[in-house]
Amino acid sequence: MSRSLKRIAFAGTRGVPANYGGFETAVDEITRRFVAAGYDCDVFCRLSHSGGQLDTHEGRRLIYVKGASQTWLETFASAFQTGWYLLRHRREYGHVFWFNNANFPGIMLTLLAGIPLTVNTDGLEWRRKKWSWPFKAYYMATSWFISRIVPRLVSDSFGIQDFYRKVFWRKTMMIPYGIPRRVEVGPEEQAGILQNYGLQSGKYFLQITRFEPDNLPLEIARGFLESGLGERGYQYVAVGYRGDSPYALALHDLSGRGGGVRVLPAVYDPKVLFTLRTHCFAYTHGNSVGGTNPALLEAMSTCPRILAIDVPFSREVMAGSGLYFRPDNIAAVFRQSIEQPSQCETFQKRAAWYNWEAVAQAYVDIVERRTPNYAG
Image 1 (tube, rainbow, N blue to C red):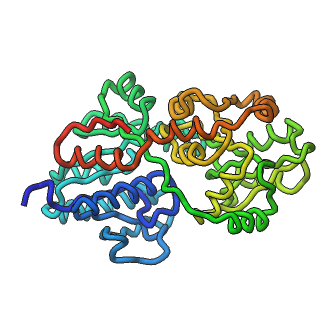
Image 2 (cartoon, rainbow, N blue to C red; image 1 turned 120 degrees about the horizontal axis):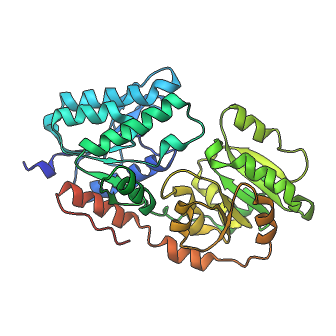
Image 3 (cartoon, helix red, strand yellow; image 1 turned 120 degrees about the vertical axis):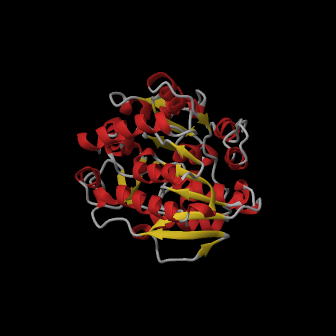
């Protein structure tokens, strides 16, 4: 059996079914297509983020690692446990894809096992405000070290690729994410969802994100209050509340006090999310650190207007369309957006370049030892 026909492993995420973030969705979409193309795929999952253990899921074999009881240690422990498994079963695998440089222990064990591997580097994690300086130093150091010793690296945007070239003097392969599969939701069901949330179509701004400082939901909510649009009947709806961190609590405290700010729990139902995006007046995107952001791609596939943080990654994905804000002018951009016409067609044409079929093919090319040339 040739190497390429052995099992392909996808490691370093919380696993499938995808119910957390961009990496999980990416692994879900890519492995579906690997299976359809005849590959055997193993997806490593964390027990702490699963709703129960499954042997398989839609053709993928699922392998669970325990992780750690302490949240701060979970990624490190899960990576080591995954790497140890791969080392012990090294003859079974033709290739391993690791996602996120933070999984350094597992990546090193995979190198030790001699299994061909590729690392999707993720964004510039050490710039995230939520991390303490020891974690920032760890991320930066591991990213530099990985750039020196791992033979194949993937960047999910041209901006990340450019950073690795200029700072780490290392070439990477640019393979982004794809836009989500379209969800079919009938008019009556959409109306029921809006009624359930007490929302009026076209009268609310929406942000669906994890409530973390790098994603700016608190700053955006304050900007909305300052804009005075709440007095004109608009609302700012932040979806993603799932933990009582000081930052999340500060945002939650603004909800329901007047001014139009509403904070909702995290939602994973595709029909609900599709409906919320489709009927918002505009989507606000505050993810300031990272490359091609899946939440922005989802917004581009459904939303009529987008207000995005003015960073290179936003401008790369939206190709100059939409409106851009800085932390110091959020209120002004909110007011400016009221006069902005719908850009649905422009967004959707741009989003079509981010294609899961092309993404998966690029990963297949890596397994088959071809140079991937992502063309969307």
